Length: 357
Image (cartoon, rainbow, N blue to C red; front, side, top):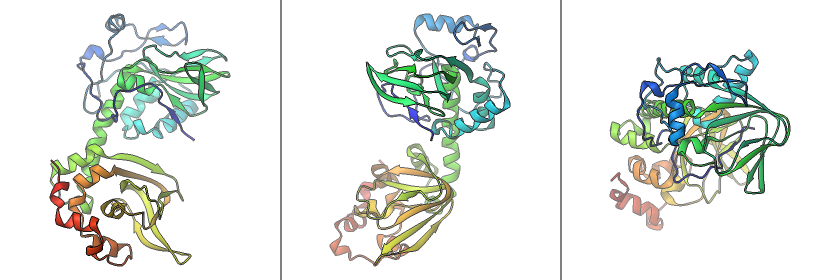
């Protein structure tokens, strides 16, 4: 199972497409082929004087906006084909890089460098500046907050991303518990690709949303606001996206990849009431009426879905939906008497407060 350990403290919640970087994208900020060996890892390191000067000043560079440039240069390290395949597979399952295109993936795979450490070695020290992002290939790394052991990172886990994203000090110490093989990615390449992937994700979501029947009538500006707040989640075959009876459902879903079915349990028997493919949506009824989930939605094979939280849903999507009676009918539910549903009356009678400011 892929896990992440983002223990560095961040001042606010931002996704990869929303990070605010305050440096330019000068050509001399791009990494170049390494020439000299690093004393710790044995791998080449950058020789640019501009990078060393920035390190002395204690500042960091930021990635340029937009897609990956064909002219972007970075350090590359030779790898066994099996390691390159492992990196590609592992990176592909990390949400931060879920929208990396082929060029970005090639840059990432080529830029990771191997680190071998014996037990007891410190990989990250609490209070230090962020330098690298790490993937665990083999072995175990213990993660400490102060003197307290809080968790252990094992094969395929990753850590160290938040200090690079938010330009904060490391808030945890990571120490090897066994012999380990790690793969590290330098901060510049990490942020450059991350920023480009975020921009690409926004464009891809824009293209996708304009083909979702529910949202076709919206203006590009309205769809753009929705794209800005979408989060991608993944499910394996048989996993439940929505549980019937859940009283704490606070998300609306649009199916991005794969298939899913909605089933309803009644009188001890489960019946399929809806099937979903790319562009299908679900979860709106519980949000509109503030009631428990009335169906379960189950993945039929691997699924990627885009979700949006309740406040954003009510502000951006709620006003575009058909009547609650029509939605209930889609799920095979009886029409509710609006006189007994304050939530239904509020949406139909005063939906103007739901519109985007």
